Image (cartoon, rainbow, N blue to C red; front, side, top):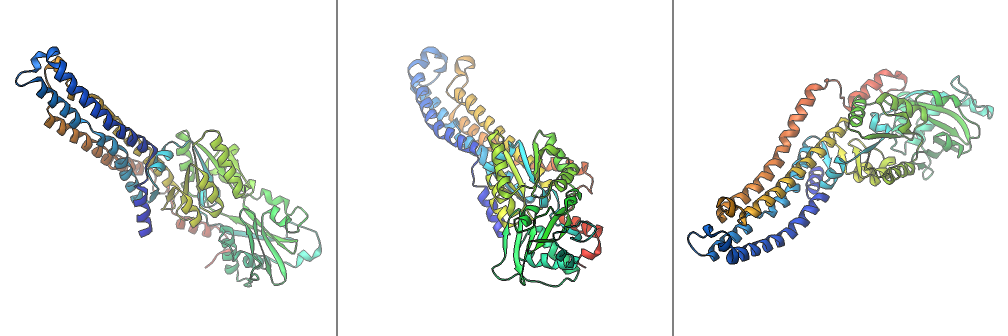
Length: 481
């Protein structure tokens, strides 16, 4: 909790680009005000009595000139310009923290408000990230046949799970965890990899030596790189599930099928983003059929889905979108997404993801709910809208107030601002900016209340609830009890 509070405090000190512009204007503004004050004094002391004789009622032209030049200095308010952005950012990031959103600064809010393309990872982002084993197919079973030699036929489903679990015990990949849980539930023999033999390639698979055998677990390309020659289980592409192939000493032993429940709020989130004109893409290291199945359910256009991508290919895709002058946000949760998250204009990590993903991301959905993405986007847009309102007010106040303080109304109405009135107006302008920033909380609370009344109560579900539903829908053979 203390680390989160520290990150929030640090975020509140990070400037948005618009704030740097306002600070630059405010810095030069001071010199302009001093010049205007001097010009006001010169004009009214030399020419004022000639142009507006009625203005010199009691006292000299010099006293009038001094009074008006002082009014110019007093009414000028670079404070409003300086407060316009940081007050809104402070309220925005604080409000985000109360809603489980870690927004790392004003620059993040400004970029996120302008995002026009969002790229989603599949596993752990659009799905709950808790895949479970649905079936294990040995190479000699009806699920598929590989006849490289008859040696394959000695492997049973339990053997395949045991060997795969021995390899995956060294990894944090979601599919690896699912294999280990399934092996434990099926009371498979506990096997361990030899020390120093484990090797993993993100997005491809892992290999290790178990006993005297080299066991590789991963994609088709991965096991081919480790000796499997024939096209194993070609019908697996039509399963519509994620699969991991298991090979022993260059010979296919079988495959393991997984399914990961889609988050219940995924379709709603994709729909909300599309309605705002944001282009939505999905990248997945999974095979095409599994990726397309998820995309069709959540509502992502199939021509914006890319499957079987490696971590470096995700990063390359983000770069290509940026070359098209798109402002890109990337949403992910795993170490495979870290490079793409770091490159994106706005990296968004699910709160349940690994540390590498959250460390490089500029937005973290601490509640681990995808619906928080829409909340963060709305908060960013409303915060920047408030910043613009504050800046417009600050500029308008000075554009109108400075000429009036310099005596522009004297020839027309015969009225002028005294230094005391000018000082009161200056304070009012700063208070107005801060009050408008504080109203951001009320506006967002009101909008959130209306949206919560419109949404069905069962629209959003937590990860743990989804995981329970997944477990209930799969054979108990592969479930922990």
